[in-house]
Image (cartoon, rainbow, N blue to C red):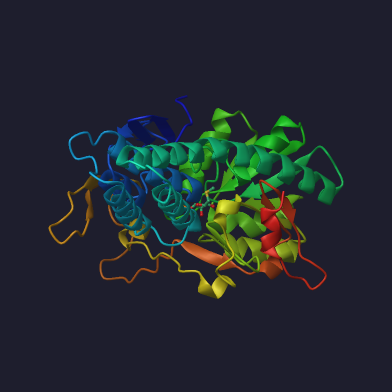
Length: 384
Ligand SMILES: CSC[C@H]1O[C@H](OP(=O)(O)O)[C@H](O)[C@@H]1O
């Protein structure tokens, strides 16, 4: 089996595993600049809330590092260029807050460097590159902490340290992060602790993150696992004693309402009906205290053909048009449409699970549970 790393980086060089080709082909493609980074994120050649933030930041780091003859002439122009590029990268996908969170932090950092004495353009660029590189390292640490906290919470909640069965949705593992994963990181930790009996993963239509990516990771790690289609979740919960449903997050609002891959909301309703714990796993970079509740979360609407296509497309990244618009064409769909021409298609990439249906939100700092008023006070997620 090929490596599980979604992102390969060394200063001046960034490659991503083209996830549109998994599990059949393990192909790394170079990302040498912001435009290529934007296209790879938009087309979902790389995806996963933490991974898209890291790839966005590093795509600019590589562009800046290799911009020998077009390097910014002044510290101010260096900051302006970095801010402009980050603002562009944020437009690639709107729902996961990690991307905007990273852009905001990196913009603030470069602004602070500019305020220092005797600053040069090189110092601004160097500070940016080092900060972007730290994101890669911190994400792995965060994921392993999430794994520890989440595995402990689940074993305590069910009152046993072995024989635990869980269900997960979408892909939240090494292919969605810098490595190890969030919800899948908890499953890895349960398995490492010999607490896991079996992991179930949903197919996660229409992009099939579960069948194409999570199943790939679970087989790679030799974790006992079974794939189900999205419409089998109720039957599974009625027949198997699941301890928990564990999912990731793209944006957790201040009250705990959570945007995650489409299909998460219905799993939360089923978990409540069957008395199964519902656990959200996310680094604090996925928590958005500026959005009061789920109503404020923008849900990305994806192209209708993604629902109609029954297998992965080949994506051709077109150069940006003079207008600055970037078009990512699908030039070779390897399969025929599975529905009549002319049918309308509804393809929201995410849905919002109300906090009332969530039992625990696990971050790298620990586990947030609802207070006596039944509210998640998510500001508490930022206290170690
Ligand atoms: C740790 S990944 C978090 C989150 O991102 C995924 O969305 P996508 O595959 O569209 O990038 C999915 O919602 C995961 O739960």
